[in-house]
Structure formats: C-alpha cells, structure tokens
Amino acid sequence: MLENGIKLKNKIAQNVLIIIIAIIAGIALIICQIINRQYIEKFLRELLRVPSIIGGPDITTNFKVTVDEFLGYIFSFLMAFVILSLTVGFFKKKEGLKDFYNDLTKIYKTKFFFLLFLEGIVITLVLTYIVVMFPIKSDVKVNLSKLQHYIMWAKGSAYANIFWLIQMLIIAIMEESIFRGIIYKGFSKITTKLWSAMITSIIFALYHIYPFETGVLMLRNVIISLLLIYMLEKTKTIWWSVGIHFGLNALLFEEVSSKEGHIQLAFGIIIVFSAYIILDYLIQQYYNKRDQKDDILGSELKDKEKKEESAVEYLS
Image (tube, rainbow, N blue to C red):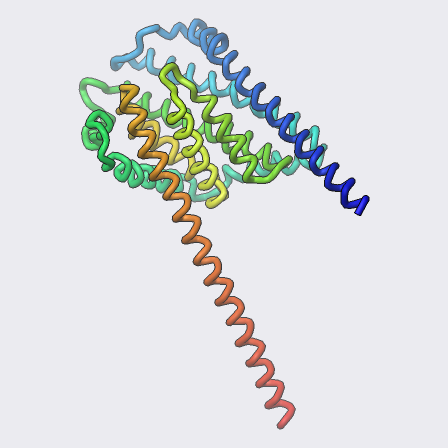
C-alpha cells in the first residue's frame, strides 16, 4: 500500500510538472509570436520595402509580400522547434528527441501528398456548404462560384490572385508544420495525445487573436484545431490537414468581413465540424469492431479446419 501511495504521488507530481512546463512553453510560443508580429515582420517589410497599401497586379509587390509572409513564418517555425525540442529533451532526454524528430519527418513522407491535399480541400468545400446552409445572416452566405471566378486569371486581378493563393498555401503549410507538427507531436512525447491536442488547440486559438476576437471565435479556432489534429492522426500525414487549412482560409474566411458575420459563421463551424469528428470517429469504430469480429471468425474457422484435417489424418 505504501509503495502504491508513493507511485501515485510521483505520478501526480510528474503530471503537475508537465502542466507547468506546458504552460511555460505555451507562453514562450505566444511571446515569440508577439515578437514576430511587432518586430520581425516590421523589420522584414522594411528590408524588402513592402508598400503599406497592397493590391493590384504589380508582380514585384506581390512577390515581396509573398516572401515577407514566408520569412515571418520561418521565424515562428524555428522558435517553436527550439522551444519544443528543449521541452521534450528535458523530459525524455536523447531518445525522446530522436523519436520527436522522426515523427516530424514522417508526417511529410507520402507519395500521395497532392491527392491528400486535394481531398482536404474537397472536405472543406463539403463542410463549408453545410455551414452556409444554416439560417444565418446573408453576409455569411459564401458565393463560392464568384469567389472561384475571382481567383482565376482575370483582368482586374491578374498576378495578385496567383500570389494570394500562394500566400494562403504558405500559411497552411507553415501553420500545420508549427502547430500540428512541432507543437502537437512535441507535447505528445511528454503527455497523452488527448492532452497534447487540447494544449495545441488552445495555443492555436491564442495565436489567432485579432481585434474583434470573442469567446465564440476562440472556441471556433479550438474546434478547427481539433479537426486538423484528428485528420493528422487519421491519415498519419500532414497534407490532408494542409488541404483543409488552405480551403478554410482561401474559400471561407476571406469572404466574411464583418464581426457579426464571423460570429454567425463560428456557430455553424462549431456545430458542423464537431459533428463531423464525432460521426467519423463512430464510423471508424464500427468498421474496426467489424474487422475484429471477421478476424476472430476467420481464425476460428482456420482452427476448425485444422482440427478436422488432424481428425481425418488420425482416422486414416
């Protein structure tokens, strides 16, 4: 009994330490993001001479904006990598770090990354159509046909559309690498996947705080993050999540400009995306159980056949 009590106390102490370290790491990540937005991005804009008013078909300006976007995320990526490496190394030492780095490389390795990326976009479109069918205000009703026409190479937008899509792709790849890659995989090494998913999703929501942010929008970001983590675990690759992230940014959020519209849209996303995760999980569980039953029946039939063969050999 005394030994069990000591083990329980040690486990509680370890969990408390993990929570404290997770909070410290989360605060460090948010501070790095503030530094990035306040100083690094400003420095990069001045270095690249990016104009304050962006728009139009000027290819040089759009190129500078795209490079600025990419370099800003590189800083966030490196800071997250260093912070989570130190965190994992503190708890799991050298072997834990190796596993962490191996997991990071695995999420990018697949021959079908482009197909998974496209499938993620399709899922986004399906979920988006479900969301906008909710009885909500007209400014949330996304006219995807007009948006898709605008994205094409048109006279009024020309180069700007192409570079805008490239920027959306950079955001999707880099944020998925930072949050679902480094942060989620890192915390998964020192705690459970469920806790890691919650920590990552809260940090992701705090990362996306904007002037009109409310509790509903924060919850929306948490749900979106949980969906992206769920897809990462389901596919064992980052590209499906990148497709969903790209689709959300390019085909949904950019079309809603008002605060009321974002709040109304957030309610639809929370309901539809949560339902999608739950239903998909239940369907997977059903098929997993059925496969297990089939395997059991198959092994029983094989055993029966072996016994019958043994009996025939014995009689003969």
